[in-house]
Length: 506
Image 1 (tube, one colour):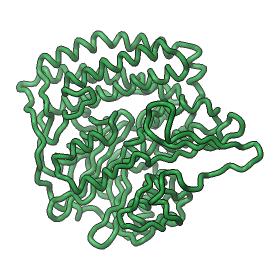
Image 2 (image 1 turned 135 degrees about the vertical axis):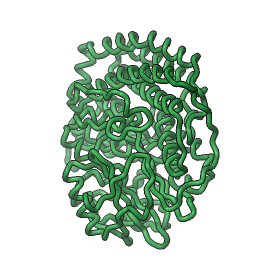
Image 3 (image 1 turned 135 degrees about the horizontal axis):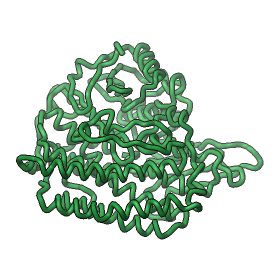
Image 4 (image 1 turned 120 degrees about the vertical axis):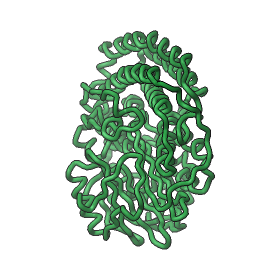
């Protein structure tokens, strides 16, 4: 730990205070940390004057940051240390043309021209091609056949390509290729006015507009020295929990449909709409857009909003309990859910899975507990009782989180009623940021750990903006869940993870 700087969630530090180690020492430090049950929050490159630097944000029970300077290549941590690094290193290679020497499966992440204009890191120039135009992994054998799905799907979903290597119905290997939704968000943010930040960050992943925008706002608040009144923090916390409920409810309905159990599918679909309407009560928008801004919120929660929230929660909580009982007590459902799409605890730990996908594999990490912000430090934690790593576990964790979030919102409404004065609405404006500084913000979005990193230059301008959606960790977990499963189980496994395409593609 001597080579690491301990930091806090949402607290800015000077860049000069971040240790910059020679790469050999950096490699050893990260190796020891990860081998001692540490995890990676962020690992990315940025250009600093004429050189390239790597920055790693690490976590165990605390947060740490450490950096190094590299040339055109560096020794791969994926091959020599842990699979946790594999996506991060591929992204570094794609974004800056810096090669992780020895990476066991070096391929593009999103397929775009890297920031330096180089294109030979991957052995071929894939930068100008459409995603997926590269040699896929192949399983050899007379009985092996290949099934390719997407990027255009039968349903109305985002584009992604899935390549299954099968022996009969059994899936031996699934390779997932994304990048069709790449918009260049990270490259864009340092070039636009601050007032555009919320609009862009709310659109990183449409189902996580509160989670991503909250990370951005907390980072700007840290760098601009903005304080947020208690009422606004309560509203922001309620909004994040409503977003969690909306998505978990919707996915339980989709899982019901995937096993042809239509009554709960219909009930969950209707109930999801109720919670989207509650977000509209809180923010004027069914997806929470336009609510969270640096310094607070744009809408004030008054007695009318509190009454509507409490009344609807009282009405709908028993309905949720009943429809969950209907789903989880059906023997036909359990026959499909249990032992399907299992990711073992050690595999999940090796990959660094986060959110409900990780908790379903008995990785108890929850950023609301480990690195609390907003009002979470004064709220009770959740407990998960089914952690076998299968579809049933992922569905059960979601059920538990729904009920927990309902409890949290009721507590938060009570806290808001006890305020001596109401919060003040804020509007987006440009703020002067502290120069030569670094901040990382972490929130437990509905999929898991969301993280934004901002680095400012000597003039206080944003030099590097790094974003990580929880899907960045978890797509490989979905691929592993299909190992030795029947290909007909893919829709069920896929929906039990329900990962973001555009949140990953950025």
